[in-house]
Length: 87
Image (cartoon, rainbow, N blue to C red; front, side):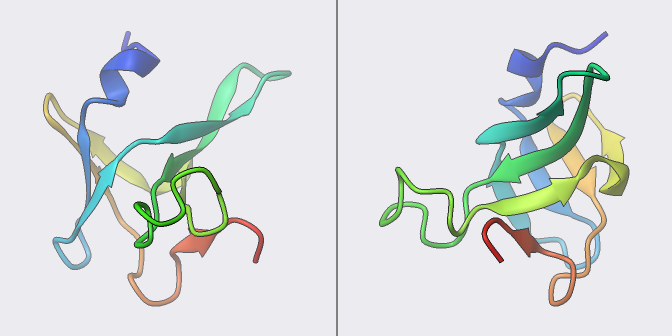
């Protein structure tokens, strides 16, 4: 079993283009079903908009390829599938 606190320390990397997406900022949880729906990562303007969620990157749970010891590999199309909140 993996703790959520352990997941937060792992770098998220897109296997489509090798880009580092950053560390997990938050989780989209389904509390009724007790599962994680998506990872929430800070968007490209993370320093400017630290307290807002507008530019956060949403990675659906089904796009996780592998959870490793130091990294979480995800497979998303870098141009079409990076979901942002409030879009």
